[in-house]
Structure formats: C-alpha cells, structure tokens
Length: 283
Image (cartoon, rainbow, N blue to C red; front, side, top):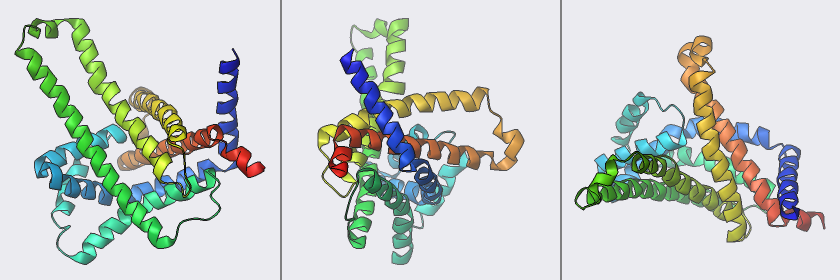
C-alpha cells in the first residue's frame, strides 16, 4: 500500500511540475519544429542508413520506422524523401542545410529538458549543434536496429518452418503471440530505448542511467498506449477530413507530435522527481 501511495505521489508531482513549467507550451514549439524538421530528418535517415544497410533496405527501414513513430504516414512522403535523398550529395551547402534543419527539433527538445532538469548553465552553442547532429546518428542506429529486429523475427519464422515445430505456426495461440511480439513488444522495446537515450544524453547535466531508464520505461509504455488510443480515436471517432479537407493530414500530424512531445516532457518531469533534482533545486 505504501509503495502504491509513493508511486501515486511521484506521478502527481510530475504532473504538477509539468503544468508549472508550462511544458505544454514547449511541446507546441517542439511540434512546430518537428513539422519543419520531418522531411530533412527522414532524408538523413535514408542517407545514413544506406551506408550500413544499402539503399533499398534503408528506404524500407525508414518507412517502417516512421510508420511506428508517426500516425497516418502518407505514401507520398516517402516519394518526396527519395527525391530529396538523390540530391543530398549534390553540394556541400545542401548537405549542411539538411543537417541544420533536421537538428532544429532536437535543439528545442534540449531546451525543454534543460528546464525540466534545472540546468543552471547550458552547453555552448557549437556543442549543442554537435549533440543535435549526433542525435541524428543515434536515430539512424535505431533505424538499423528496427530493421535488424524485423529480420530476426523473420529468420525465426523461417527456421521454425524447417523444423518439426512447423505445425505450431497453424495454431491460433502461436499466431497471436507472434503478432503481439512483432506489433507491440519489439516496437515498445525500441521506444523505451529511444526515450531512455533522450533523458540520459540530452540534458546538460549528469543523469543517472537508472533514473533515465525509469522515465524512459514509463514514458515509452504510455506512448505505446497513446498510439493505440490515438489510432482508434482518429479511425473511429474523429473526422478531420470533413473539417480540414486536404489539410487533415497536416493537422493530425501536428496533433500527434504535440501529444508525443507532451508525453516526452512529462516523462522527463517524472525522471526529475525520481532523481531528486527538484529537492536539490529547492534546497
């Protein structure tokens, strides 16, 4: 009972600090720059992923990765990404512009997390830009990981086909477990890893890995549930196309990024409470 009460108090304090720090306003800023950074970031993911996986695998992996992160990814987006990716090596200026634009959203995330974790002195401007570029590389690693996980699951399926366990694949319980692992467990693991990396690496102060892991696990779990609920809401309850017409995709995209950014900052508030950063500041 005491443990449940402690959990409730921690969640409540995180929510109070979320409103006190005006994190919703910061989430709106992150959503705006996320919209601006989306295409350049996707182009960079394809470009960097192609160096490790090959162009075709990188394009497929990027599409799967973005579909897992974003709701309702229009098919024409990947067509535009492929067109821009072909021009990325056309000049140094274009490459720098793509990197700079893709890094803007990470700069806004860093600003929000520095406030949450009560950072007294921010990193120098040049170091902040280097970190933003490095985070693009980390996303590329997650892209490779998502492709590897998908390939591993496919390999396991093919291996079972060649053994005496092949008849098990016809059982409903096997199909349900296989679907659950591929649709929920694997994406959830990568999501938790992404949130953990953000909380551990981005703030301009030392964050214990256990604190970052707690915040990443809770926020990643809530984000996975939020995605399921948001998908159901858009599919069955809301009709943005009737209201916004051709702009419906942009509106839904912005709403989803805004909700995701709110959850990202709330998870940071939770980690800050668990890590004792609030008590440190008040004392």
